[in-house]
Every structure is written in structure tokens, then in C-alpha cells.
Amino acid sequence: MNRISLKESLFLGFCAVFILLSRAALRLHLGISGHVMFSMMFFLLIARGCVPRFFAATITGLFAGVAAMALGMGKGGPLLLIKFVLPALVVDICAMTLPFMFQSYLLCAFVAATAASTKFIDTYVMDRLVSMNPDIILQHAFLEAAPAVFFGVAGSLFVPPVIRRLKSYGVI
Amino acid sequence: MALSFLAFGSRTTTGLLWLTVINLALLLVFRYGFIFLRREIKVFLWQTAIIVSLYMLRFGWIDGFKQGAMISWQLSLAYMPGVIFIKTTPQPRIVETFSAVAPYRAAFVMATCFKFIPLILTEIRNIYEGQVFRGAKILRRDLLNPCNWPDLVFCLALPVIIRSMNLAGEITLAAKARNFGFKKKRTCWPGI
Image: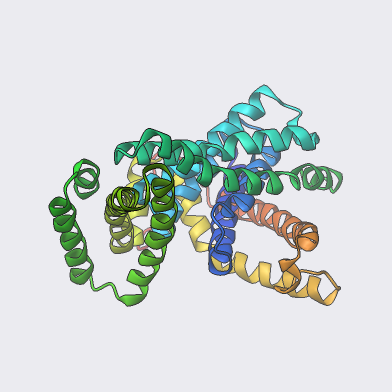
């Protein structure tokens, strides 16, 4: 059966809530750009690892985006949705092409780096729209994306052991 | 949305000044205080510092400062209407709009997750306190050291994930006991 069950959808919803809770908690204490990618990548990968259905991570990202809008978190208004959905979509596509990625640290790190680098696209598009100098757009987007990739990879490295433990406990 | 697009298209100082006045007027109309403005100014200053320094490296001190500050101002004005929209639109209205376009199950999941946030927070707090008593290095001062981050994941995140899975199972059972999903069209208990 390919349809996501109610229990799985609720779990994905809870993962979205965890992303927002950790985002709110980290925002209060750290002032480093891109650090929210740590929890975001961790929970997006966990969502996809626990619910092995296509679009599981995207649904989590979509829920988190709508909830972030509803709770008034982050900057960018309706653009917040793109910030959440784009990395989630990358996670889903990668999980589909690399089904064994949740057992490998290297693959998880690679997927997280790819997904977190979508911050480059967000920044590039926004800067392009305000007609920033092309050279500076690239530098600025890189400065925004680099910490995001670093924290995203750090968060993803905890995914394989957590998935392994969840499997050994018989939860998934 | 229109204000954001105007900010993207605006190239003159006069245009940006007008947009700033409109945004500030909106903030005054919706009575958003100094705390909100202070947080936005903080984000604006951080962004300005990065962009201006990049422009100064590329175009020299004076030209770089002028162009960088202008772009940063424009970028902040592009973000500002979105932030005002989110802060001023009531939460139920956004969820209602989402529910109107989303399938009934997605709307149910969304509403349930919002409703269970306090319970999840209580669970997290209970697990956190329990793990601290067991000696897990997850106190705020411990987390300043990245070596203790695995403790946070294995002693807090893992039990919370397992608990949320159980909670999802319990909610599903309760919903199914009330015939949730029996009819494709959304229904609700009379009088609610």
C-alpha cells in the first residue's frame, strides 16, 4: 500500500512540530546563521527514514512551513514555505534514488549537504530579484549556504544510529 | 505581496523611502511595538553588515557602502511585508485557508499537531528532567560543548521520537474509534 496511513501522517506532523520547536529554541540562544539546519536536516531525514513513502519529507516540510507561517516564525513571509519544502524535496528525491542511505553516514551527510545547499538557491533568487551585483550574489549566497551545509551535515550524522536504534527497538 | 514586489522593482531612494513609510505606517496601524521592530532591525543590521562588506571589497569604501546599503535596504523592504502579513493575520485564518485547499486528512493532522504542542512540550520537559537526573549532559551549559550533542540526540531526541510515535498511534486509534475517514467529505460532531 503506497498511501500514507493516518498514524504515519500524524508522525510526520509531529516531526514538523519538532523542527519548529527546535528552531524556536535555537533562535533564542544562538546567533549563528544557518544553525537551524541542524535540527531541520535531522528531523527531515528521520521523517523519511521512519516513513518510507515518497513525499514523506516533503509533507513534513510543508507542514512545518505552514505552521511556521501560522506561528509567525522566521522572515520571508509566504517565502518560508519554499525554505522548508525545497530541502525536503531534495531529501525525498535522494531517498528514492538511494534507498540504503539511512544506513550510511556518508550518504546521509551527502544528502544533507545537497538539501541544505538549497539555501543557496533561496538567497540567490532573492538577491537576483533586488538586482544585486552578480559577483556579490554568488558570494552572499555562498556565505549564507556554507554554515547551513555545515550544520545540516552535522545534524544528518546522528540519523543512521538513531534509525538503527529505532529499528532495534522495533518501533519502525 | 504588492509591497514586496514594489520593493524588488524600486531603484530610487525616494521610492524606498516611501515604501519604508508605508511599512512603518502598517506597523503603527497594527500596533506592533518596539520589541518586534528591534528584532527586525537586528536582522536588517546583520544582513547589511554582510552585504555592505562584500560591496566594499568589490567597489571600494564609498561606492561600495552606498550600493551595499541601498541593496540591503531594498532586501529588508522586500521581506518586511511578509513578516507583517504573518504577524497580523490570525493563526486560525491561515490554518482555515490551508484547510480549504488541503485534503481533510491533512487539515486534521495539522489541527491535531497544533493541539498537541502543549502535551509534546510537557513530554519533552519530563524526559529532559528524567535524563538530567540520570546524568545526561544535556544542561544548557553542557550543550556549549559540541562533544555533548550526541547526549542530546540519544537521551532526549530518541525517546521523544518514540513517544511521538506512540502518541500518533493513540490518536489514530481514538480517531478510528470515532469513524474518522469513514466518509470522504469532512464532517464534525453536531454542536461543536
